[in-house]
Structure formats: structure tokens, C-alpha cells
Image 1 (tube, rainbow, N blue to C red):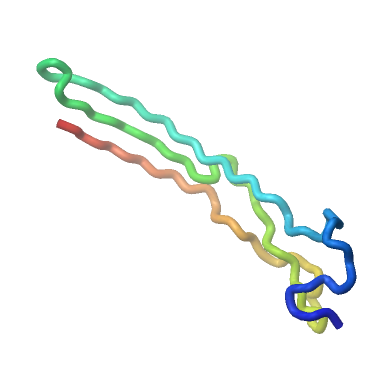
Image 2: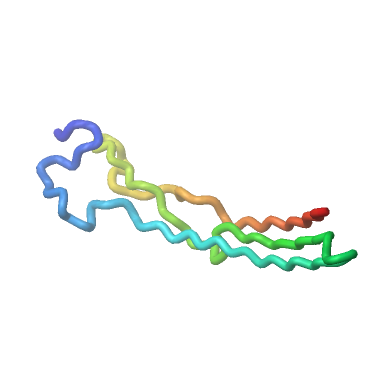
Length: 91
């Protein structure tokens, strides 16, 4: 039986033994509006999207050989899509 966190005598160059890949794309849209004497004041409105395309990143497989779920991926390792709205006034 291999030690914890080891994959027995398998080669470390076997690509299919790695965890699933990660795809997280964050986006931001911003608009600055200058006004007042000599454009002294600025209002910035911003929308930010974290994990904008809501890609699911699977968690690591179960590595406990005595478990009935050995080798199965039973969860996610990232957050769901989130939006953030921001308004900022600078003077």
C-alpha cells in the first residue's frame, strides 16, 4: 500500500494522474466621468464579474484506498459566478 500523498510506483510523468485543470476568468467594465472646474472631480462606475463564465473546476479525486469512493471526484474547488458593483467618487 502506498504512503499518504503518493501514487504507488506510478511514474510522475503520467498526465492522467493530475488533478483537473482550472479555468477562472474574471472581467471588469469601468466608466470614468470627469466634471467640474478643470475636470477636478471624477465618478467611476464599475462592474466586476468573478468566474464570469461559471466554469466548474472539479476537486481532487479521493485518494483513500480503503474508501468506497476511491478515485471519485465528489466536489468542486472553486466558487460560483459572483458580480460586484462599485461606485467611487474622487475629488
